[in-house]
Length: 627
Image (cartoon, rainbow, N blue to C red; front, top):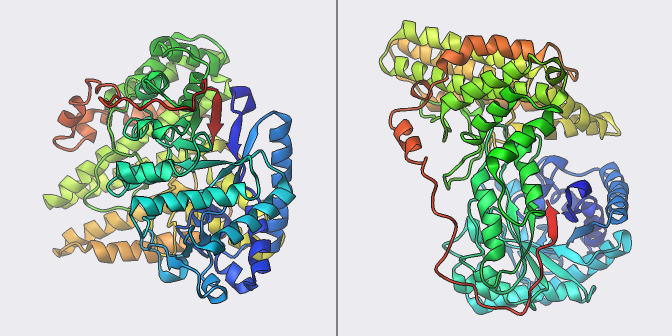
């Protein structure tokens, strides 16, 4: 991170150990705390008030290990001159809080993504209530005593949660109260806030409401993360956050899902427009992805922009990237990356890409392929990259072998969409023989996908589960941590509340989760045609949940942790087998190809007729942050 110029990052590890001490000091009992903390795989959402208790509680050994780890993280960050952003109190408290403070102003938070009452709706303590400052300052003192401080704190009270009162004067009071709880303990405190509330619920957060919150804090004492500025920037609408400094961030990824994707043209253009707009308060660039391990090119590129005075020549940049990545100049590799630049990495839509590709989706008859690019370009890029492997030095490079697997994965992802399209057509036309042919093809796609993913450790489930188990100190903890790790990847909740949100095309998941789901779905289609009866999606989805999805989360089977097979050789074989299906006509549904073609003309640059007003706070863009 430091070598990439990152000088600020969230440092949230170990905060639950501090919160437990605070809650017990306030008079809550251990049961209250245990029903509040989620399991390790879901802590990010518990910290933002979205869920409570799910997959928990946290064990004492977790707190001990996390506290020690946080000390090591902070020591290294500070040694490298990086600013550690610590958590602050946002108002989310356990349900038992109301029992201790019956006269305090608390309200249950909104139900998030249909989670049942047992796991949803922690209480929100109104920041204007005097008890808020008591809790907030107690936490701050305990936190700083334990970990020290670099004077920057993150607090997001309304992340995907709407305030109960929309009056601007109330929202201004909320902001002031949160900031007051910080400076009461640390007079130098700067409040970092995500702008996701303005993106997620734009109808509520009108300009006047947003302004009330943003200007409730002295200018320069709030730092705003423009979280998804590559697609949904808010700095124009909100007039450079009414004078508060902001960091231009690329979100790019939800859930750590796999799939070649990026809006490189937007990133290349918008960073410099945001920096140069009149009265800009932009102070840096940042990364806010929900998961790594994919699309490394986008993060390499975004990190570099903090050092640039003007947009890059993308053709030259991608050419040099291929050389850096593989350790040698190679014409075929260069051509491959140029094709990828102009296809998968030229996203010009505005919808949020959650990686909901057909291979990892719960099967139904109504799925649509997620494609915004020329399928043929991806096919040709795969072929060119394979050709680059004829050079022994390139083929020996670990990054090259990874990318050969990744492009094969992308190709089979598209092949599955093409086969699915034919299977649905056969079912709708009641052609049983054709359905069986395409069903068999779909199973072959999954088998081949499993095979190629198994050639690279970074595309395997085994290391993920091994790492989860290794954190445990008892057999019970080992089972709980593995269950957390499996559930996050699949059901993401007790009943699949946000199923497949963090889907991964990994060996092990393909063979034991995605393939069996599709097998049961296709078998049900077969029976419906063979027996002349209607297809019941509800019954089939229940069958898949009972026999595949939930059992997978509870299973304890081991999976390989070391790769097997030759990535280049396997990828070559699969290209020969599946490339004939990789055409836009084969993959896209009727009308999608025309829609894709209409996006080829670049949209106008992000701009606004409204010029941000001049503000007293000005600084040269210098902060680079990653969440």
